[in-house]
View 1 (spheres, rainbow, N blue to C red):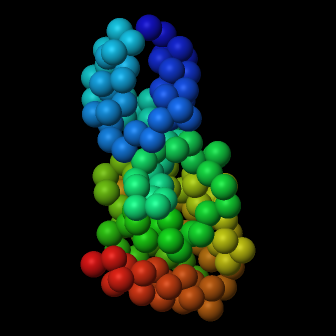
View 2: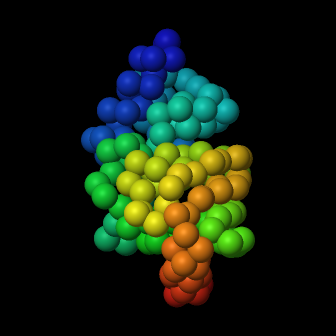
Length: 149
């Protein structure tokens, strides 16, 4: 199956079902006769901008650009391992491969305190408008991370 068709199928599945793992997506594809490697599926998911959200005690994939206005603090708290600040910049440490998807979601629904993001494989750099904004976001995320642990 061509990449474009496969990605259209993945997009359709994500919109119709609450799928929470790559394995679930892969199994749904296989039921439709589409066999892909984990690497290909990961690349498709990244290119489509899939991200996980947590709503009503359930975690599942959505298209980042189709999320309703997100609470950046709540969203990031569920996806990062650690946050560090230097002046007006924040560095979010994520799991491998998640930084770019998080950047897309944050940029699409940016908090007014954020100017933009730059992502690596497991690190997301967020540039804030002010030192005060960076301090506020860092404190809020750290407080939320403490609640989650």
